[in-house]
Every structure is written in structure tokens, then in C-alpha cells.
Image 1 (tube, rainbow, N blue to C red):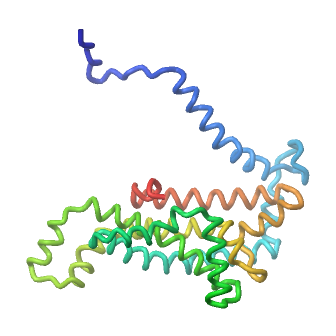
Image 2 (cartoon, rainbow, N blue to C red):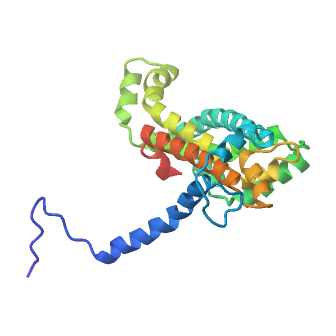
Image 3 (cartoon, rainbow, N blue to C red):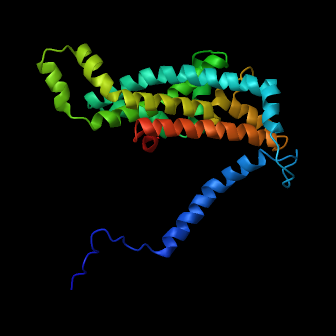
Length: 268
């Protein structure tokens, strides 16, 4: 006998174990983050126990010259690399959508799928032995552009795949040149995906540690590298404070990217 489906509007009861498993998974992911945020307000240099509430650690960040320098470097690198990777990634996404060359998609997506430590070592060897480039600001920017292009290209290609091709055919039938079609039709339609890809590239750049560690050299320090150098001594509330600010910036940018294009976060 066939079971009668539930009446319209009546929610199906979900098993209890599903909620329990989901709760443990979310706790595993987010409780460590909540602990970092909470202890950034701890009125004690040692994080052994909670002493009291204070904002002194955030005030100290404003007078920490090494941290401010690292923040300026991170923002500059993220800005330059995100602009370059957005332009190149958009062009790559258009090419991947328009031309059915399998090797093209493979070349664009490979840096995304490659382990970061392998990509970092490869770029280090390439910069030193092939380009004879001194490691510093330029090498970090080039490295960040390399791994960000693929993310932008995936977001733009996903946006293009969901569009009706008859729109572009109608523009060509009306006498529009390829450049006019791109400028007046294609680009306005993919602009949310381009903006989402730019925000994603900026976020990935400002958060990156592994690839930056291999390509930064001695003269350049970013926020992740500065945090790493601080936790080698001790995890102080100041480390928690800068980690909290970096976390909020990252979540804000990813939320903005997801708002502009709902496929952006899933593509990443």
C-alpha cells in the first residue's frame, strides 16, 4: 500500500539525531571563534582565565606600529591584487563561457584546486630561479593575483551560464558590434558577479598566510604574518583582538559578495 504524502502546509518531522548532529557541527565550527572574540576583551595578559572586561587591547592596536604597518601592507596588496585579478578573471570567465577549450578551463581553475603550500613553493621557485625577482611587495601581489584569478573566473562563468543566450543574439541582430554587445549588454548583466568576485579576491588576499609566507621575503609583513610572529611567543589578548577585527572584516566582505551574487560563496 502506498503511503499517503503529508498534507500541504504540514511540515515533516525531522529526526532528533539530525538536529543533534547539526548542533555539534556548528559548535565545532563556531565555538572557537566565539572564544577568540570573548578573550579579546579579557582584562589579563594571560589567557588562562577570565578576569574582567576591557577595551585596552583594541586601544593598544592603534599604537602598535608593527601591526599598523602590517595592516597597511595587507590592504595595499589586497587592493592591487583584487583589481588586477578581477580584470583578468572576468576576461577568463568570458573566454571559458564562449570557447569550449578544455585546457583553458583547466589552466584557469588549477591554481584554485592546487594545495596552497604547493602553489607557494612553485611561485617561490619561479620568482627566484626564473624571474630572478627579489621577494617583496611585488612578488606577494603577483602571487595573490595568481590564485585569485580562478575564483573570479568561476563566479563570472557561473553568472554567464545562467543567462539566456538569445539576449546576446538579439543585440547582434540589431547591429551591435562585439564591443557594443559587451559594453551595453553583457557587462551590465554580469556586473554583480564581477563585484562579488572582486570582494572575494580582496578577502582571499587579505586573509592569505601560506602563499604569502613563501613569497613575502624579509621586508614585507602582512596581518596574517604579523599574527603568526606574535603567537610564536604567546597568544595574548592583543592577538585575539586583531584576529577578531580580521574575522569581522572577512565575514563582512563574504556576506557582501554573497549578497551581490548568491553563487559567489558556493563557488569559493
